[in-house]
Image 1 (cartoon, rainbow, N blue to C red):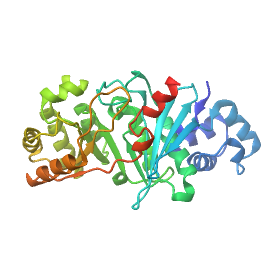
Image 2 (image 1 turned 90 degrees about the vertical axis):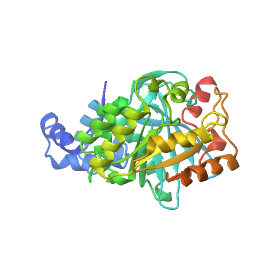
Image 3 (image 1 turned 60 degrees about the vertical axis):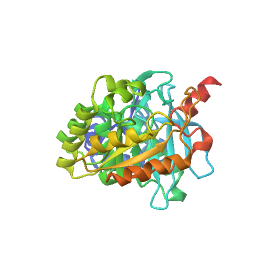
Image 4 (image 1 turned 120 degrees about the horizontal axis):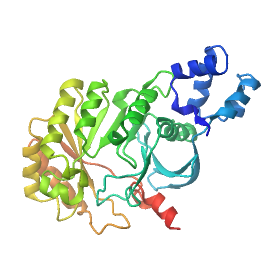
Length: 343
């Protein structure tokens, strides 16, 4: 099976062109430029035809092809991609006044089993390679070039990034590389359901991106009702890992908190959040639940959401209600894929 060019760093491409094709190393920089532009081999016009032919015999120029897309009234665009082996994955383009973001998936399906999330409805199939994750951003950057391209990246699509750690790490380094998309770590967010060993691995590997924890409940009892990962790791253990991350990187962490009406939006939950997050440099993103096809839980009203936010701010915990985008076109992760499969 042919390998993906997007899986390789510049230094790795230099070794490939020199050792595999007996070409000068400067060809690697030309190839990398085309990879970042998401060009097909026919567009590698500054490279000899003989080398293009060899590349085509052994490597794939484009890891993904677009299967369909839907555009929301707020400008968000959800893409459904098909990988080389026929798997379906989703990505989202999110336009903002301060710069455009792309939310990428890191796995085919998800094995975390969160009850409110559509990503894991069909279970976990496989990890995406670093090049498959990167190609989502490369495709959309090319597709939205007239809109300013891509300025920020969010690993908050389908899958758990820290359960696909090696590929996540390589993706982050490819994104950050001056020869890649050259996006600074401050403009990259990694969201985790809560794998403390993975958080500490980021510390050891000197990654200083924005780290987001999908908390969604401030007590172990409640969290276990909606998140399978809570059976393994307590909220105290997770917050301890986040404190270590802040101490090493100096980066304020983000607490993602989906508001579920009648479940985690009570005054008792505010007290539990205050006690849990005390001493952690963080900001809480309150996210009214985006209803999915197979989940009976409902979001609170807009008034209830902002009342909860005001009360939490009153305790000294920084928080805001996040603006949800794409809700009118199956905005939750996994919904477009699931509906496509159902058809």
